[in-house]
Amino acid sequence: MLTPASSVTKPDPQDLLAWYDRHRRDLPWRAKPGEVADPYRVWLSEIMLQQTTVAAVRPYYLNFLERFPTVKALAEAPTESVMQAWAGLGYYSRARNLHACAKAVVETHGGVFPATEAELLKLPGIGAYTAAAVAAIAFNEKAAAVDGNVERVMSRIFLVEEPLPKAKPLIRSLTEELVPEDRPGDFAQAVMDLGATICSPKRPACALCPWMAPCRARAEGLQETFPRKQKKESGQLRKGAAFVVLRADDTILLRTRPPQGLLGGMAEPPTSAWEPGYEPSRAVLDAPIEARWQRLPGTVRHVFTHFPLEMTVLFAKVPKGTPAPHDMRWTPRLHLHEEALPGVMKKVLAHALGELPGAKASGKKPAKGAAKPQD
DNA sequence: GACCCGTGGTG
DNA sequence: TCACCAAGGGT
Figure (tube, rainbow, N blue to C red):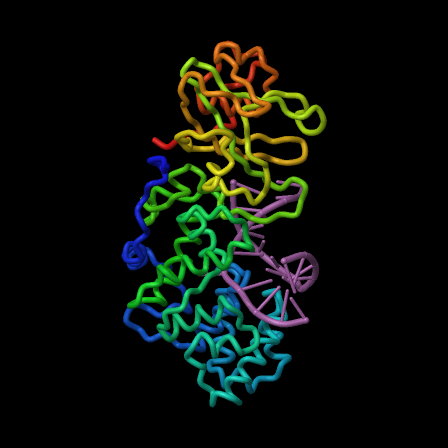
């Protein structure tokens, strides 16, 4: 069953475009409203902008355009002059591919850029993102240009729990469904502007976002934790679900962890496995007992020595007389403080039940790791 | 799919 | 300080 925080509307591309029309950045390679985009300039800027900031690209782009005004001029230029003009921008294979691409456009396309995503993709230095971006921006093809900005925006809007890069196909399909028929190029640039100025990696300015209402990460207060990313480090974030069951006689379902290993011999409410790829949306499948499970807003976070943990908490009430599953037991709520509950499990129980009666052994601040529910 | 590629900005 | 990140692509 969905919590109220999960019930949000679908993002409307037109809301984003309306925002873009008012707040779009004025960039030298960007056609002004009403102007026709020059494929050469769009392509040149997209190559330069690969993994490179707008501020770094701007002077290089202007200099390039002056020295090589057309794709033909670029194709005919000596390699050394191209490399020289690129010097300082980094990723120098881009410059070689840029030159090779210009020659290919001149020699096999008559000096005219191919107008489709599929054809662009065949050219050197043009990958999935750049092909879609040029097709959309320069040729108004309904192509989904998915770059780091788009991945961040979409993963937040749709609360994509799957980590990158595995989530790329999902994010791509989510993006494709949003690309509007009328302004695919503006849509691509709008999402990127949004990602660059509002939906930033850290401290996103959600209050100013045209998609704040439909954003599921924002609704959960977790916008800064998306996109999830696959990290091979031992410190990789693990996720899981904890199940807090309150029986009608005011007892809580607990179990004791195995004597060896992490938190060995300690008490806990039943939990799922903890793993980087855990999907909280499927947590109910791991529930220890049949009940009407309620997914509580927010999460409980805890840092172990070798990995951080983020727990989703599910809560259920069951009738008096409900038996405890194998290897579990019912503990009176008022006796929880007598259990060997590790800190993370105290956080979980506090998240579901409020502050534990008598559970103030260490002078820790209450539920510090618990994300606050939204207003 | 992992790894490499460059430089500048950021909290 | 330093890890992370920026309109990715090629191998």
